[in-house]
Image (cartoon, rainbow over all chains, first blue to last red; front, side, top):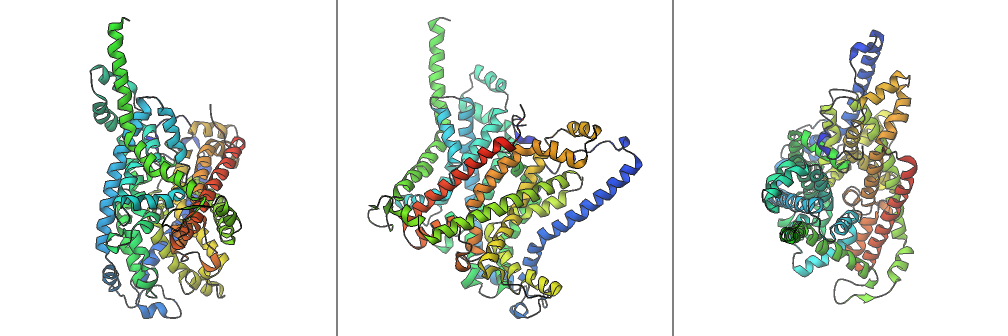
Length: 307
Length: 301
């Protein structure tokens, strides 16, 4: 189990249930008991599923409630009256459109850069040994253990020295160039590419960059998807670094802007706070629903440590 | 092989090694400049007094002495450990149960979607949503008041219930991810092994305890290391959900402490010392987990 190479097959939504067997081997009694058991499972899972979706529904319901209704003593579930004005009010209270542009373009750049540099490094580590390459890979593995927050203060002052405080460069460039986990994951994928493909190309006189581009990258396409999705989630949801590094509101990312709704801009008007929260989460949730199979499979494989 | 043929090959090998370095270069440079350099500087700053201006003054171990005696740091370590020790076993246990349940049914797409939605949602949004759920006049308390007829406490205003709330939300936000990881692990078990055990008369529980659990134990182990490390780094949630460190520093975590000492109190030496303590704690706990691994984790081969 530890040695199976690449996590291509980790698709929890698609694979067959464990222990499912041809029904013919069971007695009728057995089958009806299984039916009851399955129904019970669905009931339990439905209850849990509802518990998971209630906070999101509550967010939506609250976002349509007016201030008077929110301050009313016995809490009512449905908005009465519905106050759609909370949404434009939340959108206009702070530069949301700007924050979306910031988050989207930074995420795209970080994802593209991470995919490129991590697969390149992974190819070097996996297939082109050089003096010290094992030691260097060991450094990559062990730095994964070091919490990012340990380097937070010096990192901030390094950015100050370069002049990148209150600049998106501080969030983009380092993120594109350091991702030991992505390197590790890409290396696992590359190790599963048959060497013969590469050797044939080398004999034909293909250069290393050509092999990387024409053979390795196409062969690890599912891995690239996984690395991209993980990098995108990290980049989009990152909070501590933008909080520390950005001062100007026009530069804020979506989560950082959203955090401003707590306190001064939202105050007691929870309807507006929840409208803002909905504005920041719904696009992500829609993207998730569209790409759910790929996203879930990618994160499932990442959790197995590229196993 | 004659020297005539060996030489071009040696030259090719030399050039090839350069290619290896070139491919690794961007990440290696990033590692050196943006991780290793700040890492070394963090160790240096931990032994200095510095407010961000001028030259750091060497103070030896004073920051560490100060931090070890600091009730705020002790409180944040305690809170962080409670958070980790509560959320990791409960979160992983729940995920394992859910993964087993989901793996034994066919139509599970919708359940996965619901469980996984918090995983793709930012912690800031999650915190704001749960703030609404847990307000004194919010959904959770209103439900309790209506069903049980008692007035529930203001969850986020009491240090203990606030920490419990952080634990609850942490589990809610991470169960989906651990569940799909465990599902992938469970699917690696070959059905024929389970079938053989069933034919030999092993019941559901025996099969789970004797076959399934040992076979997924490497995944559980790996996930518990990851979950522990990430819960030691809790920040976003406590920063927004309970506003700063919470009532009476009841939800002050180590990372919040690092942020507070550095970026709010401009005491960057102390902040760095606290971050070294976080590193030490992380390494210690991971070492303990790897120690326990020998007894509890079953590897094939």
